[in-house]
Image 1 (cartoon, rainbow, N blue to C red):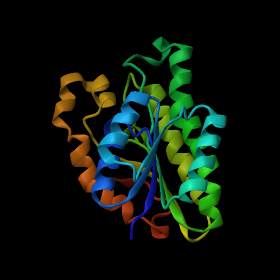
Image 2 (cartoon, rainbow, N blue to C red):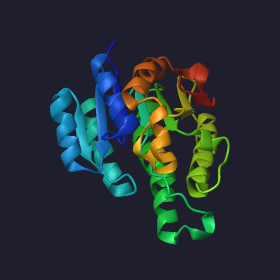
Image 3 (cartoon, rainbow, N blue to C red):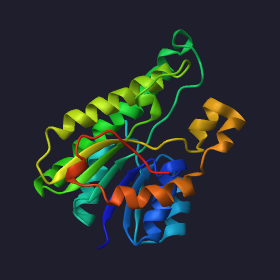
Image 4 (cartoon, rainbow, N blue to C red):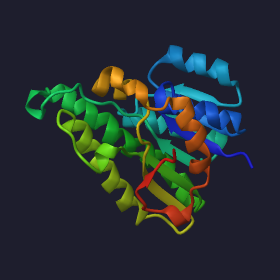
Length: 227
């Protein structure tokens, strides 16, 4: 049966890879990003069965409007994937500006909270659906020069596990580490070394069936994508 899947940060990297793979598998994708041009390109590539919108997830009012439109048109999602995130440039914490630190926090934590706040109630009402919050190996370990990013992904682990305790029995909320994927964020950390990681499309081929198989049995578990 076809599922309705909401994905944030759908224009690049993991989000783009998942959108394409879910489309290939016959599911409906509702996605958001910040680039109108990239969203238009994605809409053309995947077709009108899907629904892509320009949304700044740090803007709670904009997220509320997007969720209202989406729920009215498509109903409550079966799967909500909070994927959108940024990383700080490699630097010791004391050298990261307040502005850059705020941006990482606002997207990686507040953005997840905003999207969840406006989509999850409809899922809870039906006691159905899975919320997947993209974590990281750096949500379970640490490295120098990425302290702001680590802070946000450790927060995602705690946020997800706490929310899992609040959900009805038919739902699940899980933090998911994607493993090493060759995205722009990984390239910003490792440069050319990122090329040894699997590409987003290859990640998505393994991850999409795994994500579709998640359910109440997985609630509150810290999971890692296969492959």
